Structure formats: C-alpha cells, structure tokens
View 1 (cartoon, one colour):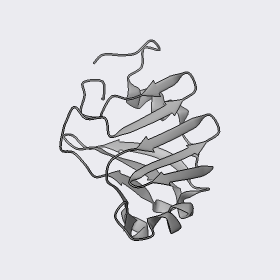
View 2: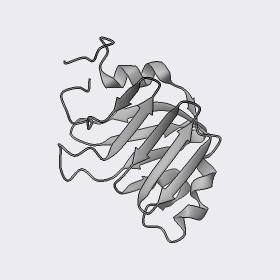
View 3: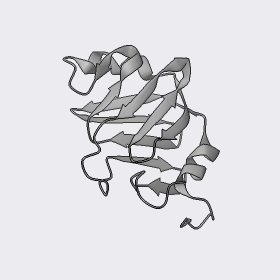
View 4: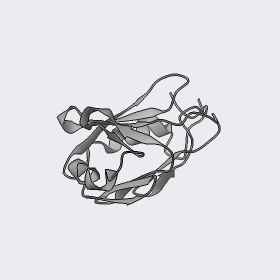
Length: 126
C-alpha cells in the first residue's frame, strides 16, 4: 500500500487527526464545504445526510446544512468499491453519493500540512 511522506496512508492520516469539530460551512450547489480550526472538507458531487433527511438536491438544503455546525467528524468509513461516509457525532453521517468514475476525486480534505485528494477507490486507501 503506497504511503505518503509521513509513512501513513491517507485513511491513517485522517484517523490520527480526528475528531474534528465542524465550525462552519459554505454551500455552493451542489458543492458542500465544511471547515473547522485548521481543516476543511470539500464535497463536489452529490451528497446526503440520511439521518437528517436532506441531500444536495433537497430544496432549500442550505437551510438544513447549519444543523451540521457544532458536530464532530469522528470517523471515515470506506466501503470497498464505494465512496466514503463521513461519520459525525449525534449519529449523523454525510454520504458521498457519486461513484460513477473510480478515478474521480469527489472530495478533498485539507489538514495541517496535508491535502488529501486521492479518491477512496485508489490504492492509497487501506
């Protein structure tokens, strides 16, 4: 499994940085950006928050996204052959819904000194 400069694969780097508190958001349909102190997550494809009953296509979804502010990003679940689900506190998840192109990079996470752009279907994920 290829590793970065730290010797860790991206899933390990993200796990080491968790939990991350969501301090704010930006929504530019359908692009969802969540951010906190020294980190950000940019989702540029269809996404959903099934537990709260809204997604990128929900009318006025911008009125619902603030419900995510104050929650913590706790875990990134990657199901083989699928895109990830970002597990948040309060039993909430953000599911990346678009798996059309396995080489696509439908989300980008920025952490201190590292930007993760490899899609979870790449060989960099364990």
